[in-house]
Structure formats: C-alpha cells, structure tokens
Length: 161
Figure: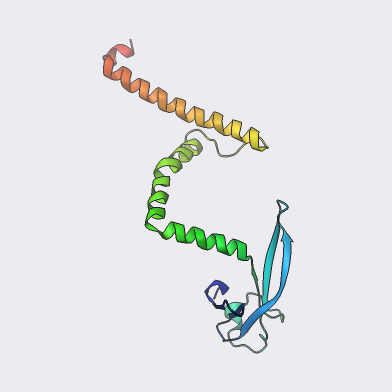
C-alpha cells in the first residue's frame, strides 16, 4: 500500500501506517536536484516496524531499518493544485481542447516529418530549431490548402498535361 493512501494527521504532523503505527516527523533535509535547486524534504520514520505482520505491504526491501517516508511538501502542494484544476469542469474542457489544438501538430511533426529530437542545445537555439520545424508544418498546410484551391478553380486533368 502506497504511503499516499495512508492517514495523515496535519495538526501533529505524522502519518499512520496500515497497522496503526505512527510515523512522526524525524527531520528536515535539503537536496540539490540536477538543475541546482534546493529542495526541502520532510522525513517521517516509523517508531517500530519489527515484528509487524503488514511489513511486506509497506516496505519493498527486507532491511531491518524502519519505514521512512520522504515528502516534498512544496511539490505535493503543486500536484494537488494541478489535480484540482484538471478535475474541475473548466479544466477538463481545456485539457480536451489541448488534444485537438496541440497534440495533432506534435504528432504530425514526429510521424510525418521525423522530428523527434532537438539537435542543438541552449534555450535560444532550441527555440530557433522548433520555430523552423513548426514553419515546415505550416508550409505543408499552406501547400495542401493551395492545391485544394487550385483544384477547385481549374480542371484537374489539365494540371497534369
């Protein structure tokens, strides 16, 4: 059972495992991610896992160390906010519209134009390369539209003579 589904006491700041054992806040820790940002992590540790019949449910390893939960509360806040936004009526509508507006273009880029990776590094270089790729998509649309107009105005048989 994942700790996200465990009971959390917000007032006293502790978790309760499936066997009704408390995991109080042990300490705060800071981690530096790959981009150099400092992340504050709360570490909760079980007061005693020895002899627990449900140990295999909450611990993936067979070590004797007590169960620990590492929580980035800032990340959890933003995840909850996104979940709330996407579950609202307006959020569902916007997400459905995104599938129509954006995903088709990027699918076209990948499948038809073979554009799956950037070949440059750096923010400005990536913007330039993506701009060129999107320009190619727009040129394909323009060519398809122009051929459609041309076919309406002229006899299709005369185009191939």
